[in-house]
Structure formats: structure tokens, C-alpha cells
Figure 1 (cartoon, each protein chain N blue to C red):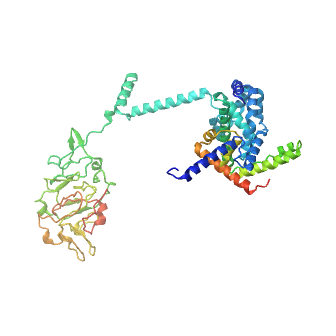
Figure 2 (figure 1 turned 90 degrees about the horizontal axis):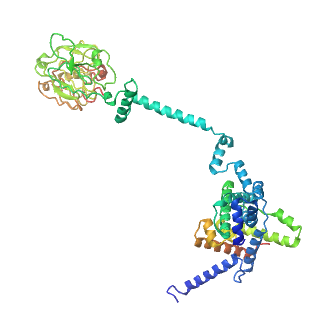
Figure 3 (figure 1 turned 135 degrees about the horizontal axis):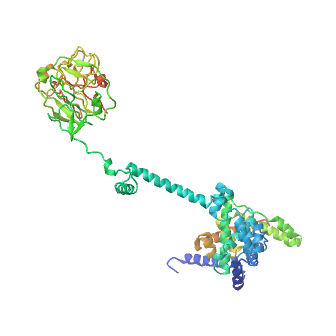
Length: 182
Length: 384
């Protein structure tokens, strides 16, 4: 979302416009749900709805650009995710999205099978990562945040965040070199 | 070449290169330095994230449809809008949180608590239990407002303790709070002596009841004990003044004791020891055959066969058969010469009435009867 457009949408959201809320939701909800799903949330859609309800409730207090808004939304999503983990009290387990993929597979069978395999591989690779490394990689790739933003959300230094990112990529590279079944 | 060597610089260059390659990979810029499989993984992850189609919850769908008004409606009916509300609802239930007591009842509760505090303050003021300044102010206010009189705190103070020095003038008088009574000698019975200080008669209630409990620390009043009548050691007693104890201190008495009669608790005790004073009597003539009870523990009453490891009483009658005395100090009748101190080693304040073996009127409570026959003056006195 371009900054001018974002400013306009944000102003409408502060005034309570439902269209502005819908625009913000359409902009960031897919990434939030994907982040929550890769992190092993039990019900990513419901958790994402809670995240956006919190965002819309407190949107009058936000001031900043589109990138800062994205970082703010994902910081809320990360906190909700931690709360969800505490509630469940167990290690995150990735939830595959087979039903949606099957629905899509009706359109283009070959591409969806390839995508499904790829999604399965991605899920396995993400699920085998340690929590800290997975947090960094998912926030970097799925949420499209910078290292500084990720470090702020996770409460770590930039150097530590970079180290975790490097170790996570190295782990994935090793597994890919060994030949993960697709 | 740096002073750290080429290897470190090479590592740094490689790390910098890795950082750049990783940054390019993660930011989506095609980088040839990264492996193709890793690039494929990142691209697949990003594409999947962008293709997600979330399903909003009904509440969120309402907000997205109707905007802020729907959100406000949602906040009102949502279970616990704030964190505190949610916590209280989790503890007590949502209904109890919404059904708070109305404002009128809360005000009534506050008024009730205020009235209770005021009443407690008034009661404390009437009892004189407040601090000095507050009590004075309270009493003045109450005096000015009401016909009642609230005592000031100074009126509740106790008078200073009376210190009575035994002199011939007050001999035989009872001092309240003290442990002894000095009975004035004389053949003719005198009326119960009273001491008056400042016009007040100084008589303890125990004395009026005929009991001398041995001071305020005595555990219980003594029952009436047997009356012992024995031969009077007039020869020695008449020559030496008795020593009475006042408040645990020794004070010489100028009047000789009443000869011949020992009243152990039944009537007026002539000399009672302090609470912790061990009994150290030494009555040389205490071999009274008419003694009917074990009320007294004269050193001469040592039963045969009892061992006395540390006798201190100077009684010539201590030479009972079978008695072993490892530390005899006065087991020899020849040691009981008048005027000789018989090494009374009893600790604490000693009622040394008759320590010379001359005072006949030594009274011991019946509780000391367990010592009768032991003749040991160490640690067997009445203790508080």
C-alpha cells in the first residue's frame, strides 16, 4: 500500500469507516494468517480476527507510515500468538491447509499439486526450526519486515536477530541439500 | 595483512558477503550467491503468505461491514471489554460484575463506616485511652458540648510507688506491694498496725484477710498451716536484732521478734521471704516436738538418711544420723557460736532473719514443706 493511500485509509479508519477497516484487513490479513499458521496456531483465522479487532479498537492511538503500521500489526499478532501458545501449553504444530488447497486444485490441478507439495515442504522445514529462528525467518519473509523491525518485535538486538536469521537459513539449507522429499 | 592475520579479514569479508546474500534473499531480490533451493523455499513461503484468504470471525465481519458503530456495539456486549473486566468476570461471573450495588447503597455503606469510626473514637475518648493531646482536646470538646465529663489522661495515671523504709516507727506495718511484715514485739498484743502515708492507711488486702502471700509475685495465697510452738531461744534471740527484708534488701530491725511462736501462714507471718529468696533459716532450737505439719523446713529437721550435698544452715541439730554432708559448713554444733556467720551460700536476696541462728520467728509457707527434713537452703525456697 502506497503511503498516500495508506494515509487516506488510516484517516478513514480513525473515523470509524468500515470500508477503511476492510481495506486494511485485505492488505495485511493474508500475511497475518499465514504467519500464524506457520507458527502453529491452533485456529489461525480466529486468532487473526482477534488481532484485527485489537488493531481496529486501538487504531486511533497509532501514528506512522504504512511500514510502521505493518510492524505494529505483526507485533500485536506475535503477542497474541505467544498468548495462544501459553494457553495451549505445548509446542506449536503447523496446521496444514489441505481443504483450501483441494478447493483450489479444482481450478488448476497441476499447479496446485506442485503448490501443495511445496507447501508441505515449507511446513516441514518451518516446523523443524527452533522457535527463535522460525520467528525471525517468518517475520522477515512472510511479514516482509526489516531486521530492525523484527528485532523490535522480538525484543532482541539487531545482531542477535541477524545471528538467528543466519542460523535458520543455514539449517534450512542443510536440509534442502540433504534432499527433502517434495 | 593486518595484525590479526589474513584469516580474520577473510572471515569478515565472507560474513559480510553472507549478510548481503541473506538480505537479498529475504528481501526478494534475486541473488546468484544463494542456492537455488533456498531461493525456491523463500519464494514458496512468500507466495503462500500472499495467497492466504482468511475467514473473519462474525464480530470482525460486523466491524468490517458497519464500521466503528458496530465496534462500539461489540465492545459493549463483548465478554469483558477491558482486562480488569475480563479478570473480574472470570472470577465472579459476568452477571456479578454488571450487577454492582447502586450508588445510594455505596454511600450508605460509607456513612455507616464513618459513623462507626466516630463512635469508636468517642468510646476511646470516654475511656481515656487516647493520647494526651487528643484526649485533652476531646475532653474539652465534650465538656463544652455536653453535660458529660470525659476524664483527661493524667487522671488515669497511677501514683508513684511508695518506698517505705523500715524504721522503728513503721515496724510492724504492712506495706502494700512488699513481701514482708515486721511485727512489732511485745508481750501485749497490739492492734493491727497500720501505716499511714499521706493520711492513707497502708494495708494490703492479703494482710487484712490474715494471709501474707509473700509479695505480689507469690503464686497463690497460702492456706492456713500449723502453728508451731517451741522453746524460745531467748538466749540468743534477745541479743541480736532480727534482719528483715524489704523489697529484697536487707534492713536491720531494731525490735526483737516475738518469742516462742511461729505462725506459718495461718496468721500474721512475721517474716516472709521474697519470691526468689531461698530459705536459709537457722533456728537452733527448732526441734519442737509439737510440730504437727511439715510447714517449716528448719535445718534441724533433716530426716535421717537424707543427703545434703551442700548444707548451709547453721543449725547445731543438723547432725542427724546418716546424713552425709560433703560440704559441711556448720554441721558442728561448735560452729554455731553466736555471732558467727555460717557461710550461708544461698544465692539471691536472702531473708537472713535468723541467719545467726537466733531469730525464732521465721515463717515459711506450707509449700516449703517438701524441704522439711532436707535442711538444705540451696534453691529450695519458694520461687515465683
